Image (tube, rainbow, N blue to C red):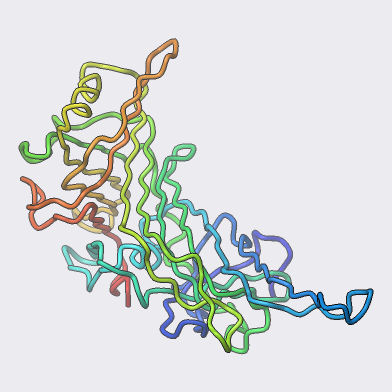
Length: 344
Protein backbone atom coordinates (compact mmCIF):
# COMPACT_ATOMS: atom_id res chain seq x y z
CA UNK A 1 0.00 0.00 0.00
CA UNK A 2 1.19 3.51 -0.80
CA UNK A 3 1.86 6.20 1.76
CA UNK A 4 1.46 9.94 2.26
CA UNK A 5 5.24 10.24 2.68
CA UNK A 6 6.67 10.85 -0.79
CA UNK A 7 9.94 9.09 0.01
CA UNK A 8 8.03 5.81 0.38
CA UNK A 9 6.06 5.99 -2.86
CA UNK A 10 6.93 4.50 -6.22
CA UNK A 11 6.53 6.00 -9.68
CA UNK A 12 6.62 4.17 -13.00
CA UNK A 13 6.60 4.75 -16.75
CA UNK A 14 5.89 2.42 -19.63
CA UNK A 15 5.46 2.98 -23.34
CA UNK A 16 1.82 2.72 -24.40
CA UNK A 17 0.20 2.02 -27.76
CA UNK A 18 -3.41 3.28 -27.75
CA UNK A 19 -3.91 6.94 -26.85
CA UNK A 20 -6.29 7.31 -23.93
CA UNK A 21 -5.82 3.75 -22.64
CA UNK A 22 -3.37 3.12 -19.83
CA UNK A 23 -0.95 0.23 -19.89
CA UNK A 24 0.17 -1.57 -16.73
CA UNK A 25 3.73 -0.51 -15.74
CA UNK A 26 3.89 -2.90 -12.76
CA UNK A 27 7.08 -4.75 -13.65
CA UNK A 28 10.76 -4.75 -12.80
CA UNK A 29 12.74 -2.03 -14.55
CA UNK A 30 9.82 0.37 -15.12
CA UNK A 31 10.52 2.45 -12.03
CA UNK A 32 11.59 6.08 -12.41
CA UNK A 33 12.74 8.50 -9.72
CA UNK A 34 11.19 11.96 -10.25
CA UNK A 35 12.00 14.49 -7.56
CA UNK A 36 8.44 15.86 -7.90
CA UNK A 37 6.45 12.70 -8.60
CA UNK A 38 3.13 14.20 -7.56
CA UNK A 39 3.33 17.17 -9.93
CA UNK A 40 0.40 15.96 -12.05
CA UNK A 41 -2.77 18.02 -11.57
CA UNK A 42 -6.10 17.69 -13.31
CA UNK A 43 -8.15 20.76 -14.24
CA UNK A 44 -11.70 20.43 -15.57
CA UNK A 45 -13.80 23.15 -17.15
CA UNK A 46 -17.13 23.51 -15.33
CA UNK A 47 -20.33 24.24 -17.26
CA UNK A 48 -22.79 26.36 -15.26
CA UNK A 49 -26.51 26.64 -16.04
CA UNK A 50 -26.97 30.27 -17.14
CA UNK A 51 -30.51 30.31 -18.55
CA UNK A 52 -33.22 32.10 -16.53
CA UNK A 53 -34.67 28.85 -15.20
CA UNK A 54 -34.06 30.02 -11.63
CA UNK A 55 -32.57 32.86 -9.62
CA UNK A 56 -30.12 30.34 -8.21
CA UNK A 57 -27.50 28.08 -9.72
CA UNK A 58 -29.34 24.85 -10.45
CA UNK A 59 -26.83 22.82 -12.44
CA UNK A 60 -23.06 22.55 -12.76
CA UNK A 61 -21.74 19.94 -15.18
CA UNK A 62 -18.25 18.70 -15.85
CA UNK A 63 -16.92 19.87 -19.20
CA UNK A 64 -13.74 19.06 -21.08
CA UNK A 65 -10.76 17.79 -19.14
CA UNK A 66 -7.91 20.26 -19.68
CA UNK A 67 -4.65 18.81 -21.01
CA UNK A 68 -2.41 17.63 -18.18
CA UNK A 69 0.70 19.72 -18.77
CA UNK A 70 3.40 18.80 -16.27
CA UNK A 71 7.15 18.67 -15.81
CA UNK A 72 9.06 15.89 -14.07
CA UNK A 73 12.48 16.68 -12.58
CA UNK A 74 15.21 14.08 -12.20
CA UNK A 75 18.77 13.58 -11.11
CA UNK A 76 20.05 12.27 -14.43
CA UNK A 77 21.37 8.72 -14.31
CA UNK A 78 23.22 6.77 -16.97
CA UNK A 79 20.44 4.19 -16.96
CA UNK A 80 16.73 4.41 -16.22
CA UNK A 81 15.34 7.41 -18.12
CA UNK A 82 16.24 6.20 -21.60
CA UNK A 83 12.68 5.24 -22.62
CA UNK A 84 11.42 8.76 -21.86
CA UNK A 85 14.39 10.57 -23.41
CA UNK A 86 14.19 8.37 -26.51
CA UNK A 87 10.56 9.33 -27.08
CA UNK A 88 11.56 12.99 -27.46
CA UNK A 89 14.35 12.09 -29.88
CA UNK A 90 12.03 9.76 -31.74
CA UNK A 91 14.47 7.13 -33.07
CA UNK A 92 16.64 4.58 -31.28
CA UNK A 93 17.11 0.90 -32.15
CA UNK A 94 18.75 -2.14 -30.65
CA UNK A 95 22.01 -1.30 -28.87
CA UNK A 96 25.39 -2.45 -30.06
CA UNK A 97 27.48 -4.69 -27.81
CA UNK A 98 30.94 -3.16 -27.46
CA UNK A 99 32.12 -5.42 -24.64
CA UNK A 100 30.72 -7.83 -22.05
CA UNK A 101 27.60 -6.38 -20.40
CA UNK A 102 28.10 -2.89 -21.88
CA UNK A 103 25.47 -1.70 -24.37
CA UNK A 104 25.76 1.35 -26.62
CA UNK A 105 22.52 3.13 -27.56
CA UNK A 106 22.26 5.80 -30.25
CA UNK A 107 19.33 8.23 -30.13
CA UNK A 108 18.62 10.34 -33.19
CA UNK A 109 15.99 12.94 -34.04
CA UNK A 110 13.00 11.65 -35.98
CA UNK A 111 10.88 13.95 -38.11
CA UNK A 112 7.89 13.30 -35.84
CA UNK A 113 7.06 11.66 -32.53
CA UNK A 114 3.48 10.76 -33.49
CA UNK A 115 2.40 7.55 -31.69
CA UNK A 116 5.15 7.90 -29.08
CA UNK A 117 3.75 8.28 -25.57
CA UNK A 118 3.49 6.34 -22.33
CA UNK A 119 1.57 5.73 -19.12
CA UNK A 120 2.76 7.52 -16.00
CA UNK A 121 1.72 6.23 -12.58
CA UNK A 122 2.62 7.34 -9.06
CA UNK A 123 1.48 6.27 -5.60
CA UNK A 124 -0.44 8.62 -3.33
CA UNK A 125 -1.75 7.28 -0.02
CA UNK A 126 -3.92 4.30 -0.98
CA UNK A 127 -4.41 5.54 -4.55
CA UNK A 128 -2.51 5.20 -7.81
CA UNK A 129 -2.67 8.46 -9.71
CA UNK A 130 -2.30 7.65 -13.38
CA UNK A 131 -1.92 9.65 -16.58
CA UNK A 132 -3.06 7.03 -19.11
CA UNK A 133 -1.34 8.75 -22.04
CA UNK A 134 1.48 11.26 -21.58
CA UNK A 135 3.66 12.54 -24.42
CA UNK A 136 7.16 13.80 -23.54
CA UNK A 137 8.07 16.71 -25.80
CA UNK A 138 10.89 18.69 -24.19
CA UNK A 139 14.16 17.78 -22.44
CA UNK A 140 16.16 20.30 -20.45
CA UNK A 141 19.59 19.27 -19.17
CA UNK A 142 21.46 21.59 -16.82
CA UNK A 143 23.89 21.43 -13.90
CA UNK A 144 22.47 21.53 -10.39
CA UNK A 145 24.72 21.44 -7.34
CA UNK A 146 27.39 19.25 -8.90
CA UNK A 147 25.05 16.88 -10.71
CA UNK A 148 23.22 16.83 -14.02
CA UNK A 149 19.53 17.66 -13.74
CA UNK A 150 16.98 16.59 -16.33
CA UNK A 151 13.55 18.18 -16.62
CA UNK A 152 11.02 16.52 -18.91
CA UNK A 153 7.94 18.41 -20.09
CA UNK A 154 4.93 16.24 -20.90
CA UNK A 155 1.38 16.66 -22.18
CA UNK A 156 -1.14 14.12 -20.90
CA UNK A 157 -4.78 13.31 -21.52
CA UNK A 158 -6.12 13.19 -17.94
CA UNK A 159 -5.40 12.09 -14.36
CA UNK A 160 -7.34 9.15 -12.92
CA UNK A 161 -7.22 7.43 -9.53
CA UNK A 162 -9.53 4.50 -10.23
CA UNK A 163 -7.74 2.59 -12.97
CA UNK A 164 -8.82 -1.00 -13.39
CA UNK A 165 -5.47 -1.71 -15.07
CA UNK A 166 -2.97 0.02 -12.77
CA UNK A 167 -3.89 -1.47 -9.39
CA UNK A 168 -0.46 -1.97 -7.84
CA UNK A 169 3.17 -0.98 -8.33
CA UNK A 170 4.49 -3.67 -5.99
CA UNK A 171 6.68 -5.28 -8.66
CA UNK A 172 8.20 -2.02 -9.90
CA UNK A 173 11.96 -1.62 -9.53
CA UNK A 174 14.36 0.98 -10.94
CA UNK A 175 17.05 -0.17 -13.40
CA UNK A 176 19.87 1.58 -11.48
CA UNK A 177 19.59 3.63 -8.29
CA UNK A 178 23.28 4.55 -8.42
CA UNK A 179 25.42 6.01 -11.22
CA UNK A 180 24.17 9.57 -11.28
CA UNK A 181 25.65 11.90 -13.89
CA UNK A 182 28.00 14.39 -12.19
CA UNK A 183 29.45 17.76 -13.16
CA UNK A 184 33.02 16.58 -12.50
CA UNK A 185 32.56 13.94 -15.23
CA UNK A 186 31.94 16.55 -17.96
CA UNK A 187 34.18 17.36 -20.91
CA UNK A 188 32.94 19.96 -23.41
CA UNK A 189 34.70 20.44 -26.75
CA UNK A 190 34.00 22.91 -29.55
CA UNK A 191 35.73 24.20 -32.66
CA UNK A 192 34.94 25.50 -36.14
CA UNK A 193 32.22 23.60 -37.97
CA UNK A 194 34.54 23.06 -40.92
CA UNK A 195 37.60 22.42 -38.74
CA UNK A 196 39.46 19.27 -37.76
CA UNK A 197 37.92 16.52 -35.65
CA UNK A 198 37.41 17.49 -32.03
CA UNK A 199 40.22 16.55 -29.67
CA UNK A 200 41.71 17.53 -26.33
CA UNK A 201 42.91 20.90 -27.64
CA UNK A 202 39.26 21.90 -28.18
CA UNK A 203 38.19 21.33 -24.57
CA UNK A 204 36.51 24.32 -22.92
CA UNK A 205 35.88 24.64 -19.19
CA UNK A 206 32.26 25.60 -18.57
CA UNK A 207 30.73 26.77 -15.31
CA UNK A 208 27.32 25.55 -16.37
CA UNK A 209 25.36 24.69 -19.47
CA UNK A 210 21.71 24.33 -20.39
CA UNK A 211 20.68 22.10 -23.27
CA UNK A 212 17.06 22.31 -24.44
CA UNK A 213 15.66 19.81 -26.95
CA UNK A 214 12.12 20.92 -27.65
CA UNK A 215 9.29 19.82 -29.87
CA UNK A 216 6.21 22.02 -30.17
CA UNK A 217 2.96 20.11 -29.58
CA UNK A 218 -0.56 21.39 -30.10
CA UNK A 219 -2.24 22.94 -27.09
CA UNK A 220 -4.75 20.10 -26.81
CA UNK A 221 -7.74 19.29 -29.01
CA UNK A 222 -11.01 17.59 -28.02
CA UNK A 223 -13.47 15.56 -30.06
CA UNK A 224 -17.10 14.63 -29.52
CA UNK A 225 -17.66 11.51 -27.44
CA UNK A 226 -14.65 12.10 -25.19
CA UNK A 227 -13.83 14.50 -22.38
CA UNK A 228 -10.03 14.30 -22.78
CA UNK A 229 -7.66 15.49 -25.51
CA UNK A 230 -6.63 13.55 -28.56
CA UNK A 231 -2.91 12.88 -29.12
CA UNK A 232 -1.09 16.14 -29.81
CA UNK A 233 0.84 16.52 -33.05
CA UNK A 234 3.68 19.01 -33.62
CA UNK A 235 3.00 22.56 -34.78
CA UNK A 236 6.55 23.72 -35.42
CA UNK A 237 10.12 22.67 -36.04
CA UNK A 238 12.30 21.00 -33.42
CA UNK A 239 14.38 23.58 -31.51
CA UNK A 240 17.82 22.79 -30.08
CA UNK A 241 19.39 25.44 -27.85
CA UNK A 242 22.71 25.18 -26.01
CA UNK A 243 23.64 27.90 -23.51
CA UNK A 244 27.16 27.96 -22.07
CA UNK A 245 28.10 29.84 -18.92
CA UNK A 246 31.84 30.44 -18.44
CA UNK A 247 33.39 31.76 -15.24
CA UNK A 248 35.74 34.25 -16.88
CA UNK A 249 36.23 36.02 -20.15
CA UNK A 250 39.53 34.80 -21.64
CA UNK A 251 41.53 34.47 -24.86
CA UNK A 252 39.41 31.51 -25.98
CA UNK A 253 35.92 32.87 -25.44
CA UNK A 254 36.57 36.53 -26.24
CA UNK A 255 36.59 35.61 -29.95
CA UNK A 256 33.02 34.30 -29.80
CA UNK A 257 31.63 37.81 -30.22
CA UNK A 258 33.38 38.05 -33.58
CA UNK A 259 32.24 34.52 -34.46
CA UNK A 260 28.68 35.61 -33.69
CA UNK A 261 28.71 38.78 -35.81
CA UNK A 262 30.64 37.05 -38.60
CA UNK A 263 28.34 33.99 -38.57
CA UNK A 264 31.21 31.56 -38.01
CA UNK A 265 29.56 28.23 -37.25
CA UNK A 266 30.73 25.62 -34.76
CA UNK A 267 30.54 21.93 -34.01
CA UNK A 268 30.76 20.49 -30.51
CA UNK A 269 30.32 17.52 -28.26
CA UNK A 270 29.43 17.25 -24.62
CA UNK A 271 30.57 14.10 -22.84
CA UNK A 272 29.96 12.71 -19.35
CA UNK A 273 31.92 9.60 -18.41
CA UNK A 274 30.85 7.61 -15.36
CA UNK A 275 31.86 4.40 -13.62
CA UNK A 276 33.43 1.36 -15.25
CA UNK A 277 30.92 -1.19 -16.56
CA UNK A 278 33.32 -3.91 -17.63
CA UNK A 279 36.77 -4.23 -19.17
CA UNK A 280 37.47 -0.85 -20.75
CA UNK A 281 33.82 0.18 -21.18
CA UNK A 282 32.36 2.98 -19.04
CA UNK A 283 28.94 4.46 -18.52
CA UNK A 284 28.70 7.61 -20.63
CA UNK A 285 26.47 10.24 -22.24
CA UNK A 286 27.75 11.86 -25.42
CA UNK A 287 25.80 14.66 -27.07
CA UNK A 288 27.09 15.57 -30.53
CA UNK A 289 26.23 18.78 -32.38
CA UNK A 290 27.39 18.78 -36.03
CA UNK A 291 26.36 22.38 -36.68
CA UNK A 292 25.89 25.16 -34.14
CA UNK A 293 25.22 28.81 -34.84
CA UNK A 294 25.81 31.46 -32.21
CA UNK A 295 22.69 33.51 -31.54
CA UNK A 296 23.84 35.56 -28.56
CA UNK A 297 27.06 36.46 -26.72
CA UNK A 298 27.20 38.33 -23.42
CA UNK A 299 30.11 39.55 -21.31
CA UNK A 300 28.20 41.02 -18.34
CA UNK A 301 29.37 44.02 -16.33
CA UNK A 302 30.65 42.27 -13.20
CA UNK A 303 33.75 42.59 -11.01
CA UNK A 304 35.29 39.57 -12.75
CA UNK A 305 33.87 39.48 -16.26
CA UNK A 306 32.17 36.15 -17.15
CA UNK A 307 30.87 35.01 -20.53
CA UNK A 308 27.60 33.51 -21.69
CA UNK A 309 27.29 32.00 -25.16
CA UNK A 310 23.97 30.86 -26.62
CA UNK A 311 24.00 28.58 -29.66
CA UNK A 312 21.27 27.07 -31.81
CA UNK A 313 21.58 23.54 -33.17
CA UNK A 314 20.97 23.35 -36.92
CA UNK A 315 20.80 20.54 -39.46
CA UNK A 316 24.09 20.07 -41.31
CA UNK A 317 24.23 19.55 -45.06
CA UNK A 318 26.97 16.97 -44.52
CA UNK A 319 28.57 15.37 -41.48
CA UNK A 320 31.57 17.41 -40.31
CA UNK A 321 35.01 15.90 -39.81
CA UNK A 322 35.00 13.49 -36.87
CA UNK A 323 31.20 13.08 -36.79
CA UNK A 324 30.60 10.46 -39.44
CA UNK A 325 26.95 10.10 -40.40
CA UNK A 326 25.70 12.85 -38.06
CA UNK A 327 23.74 15.63 -39.72
CA UNK A 328 20.69 16.13 -37.47
CA UNK A 329 21.05 19.04 -34.97
CA UNK A 330 21.88 16.75 -32.04
CA UNK A 331 22.59 13.08 -31.47
CA UNK A 332 22.91 11.29 -28.13
CA UNK A 333 24.94 8.16 -27.46
CA UNK A 334 24.36 6.43 -24.12
CA UNK A 335 26.42 3.53 -22.83
CA UNK A 336 24.98 1.47 -19.98
CA UNK A 337 23.73 -2.09 -19.33
CA UNK A 338 20.25 -1.84 -20.86
CA UNK A 339 19.87 -4.66 -23.38
CA UNK A 340 16.59 -3.54 -24.97
CA UNK A 341 15.88 -0.87 -27.55
CA UNK A 342 14.99 2.30 -25.61
CA UNK A 343 11.83 2.64 -27.71
CA UNK A 344 10.78 -1.00 -27.34
